[in-house]
Length: 192
Image 1: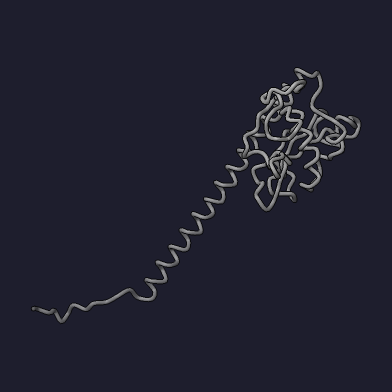
Image 2 (image 1 turned 180 degrees about the horizontal axis):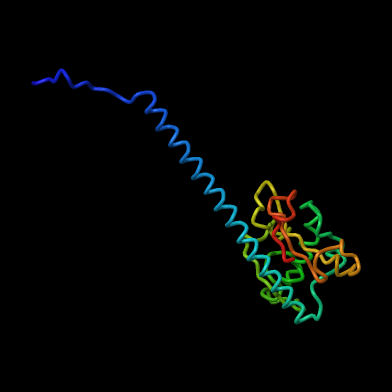
């Protein structure tokens, strides 16, 4: 067996190893940032589509009923509210009006063949609803997670106080989500 005395077996130097680790760290940071951006963009797009569908349901409701969906509970919520807990009662009333689901079981009363059922203007997928014990508690916005319930906001306060511009944005109804950014109203996803 021949050996070459000039041939030395050598491994990586510490500088080469640190360079490789640094490059990998930068690539991982970039990919995580891109993933987070893509995820946020996906949630925003979903919220925009869902709000447009709810607006269309309100317009269909108005076509049939000659008024937009509204009652004293939706009149009481301000569209400047930052508290998700304040959204739930108005959100639930809105849900009942546009789905015709008076018993809140996630199915329109017409689809269940109930007498005197109100029309359904929008069917929600089960993933779009928060169910507690088989009962709908609210329409979920895309940022709604198991530990952090987040309903869409629905307000007709400006319709009840048309002269008060601080009561809301639209004279008919407001639908919005604060999109996990309560401190930045410009980042909210809205119909105004």
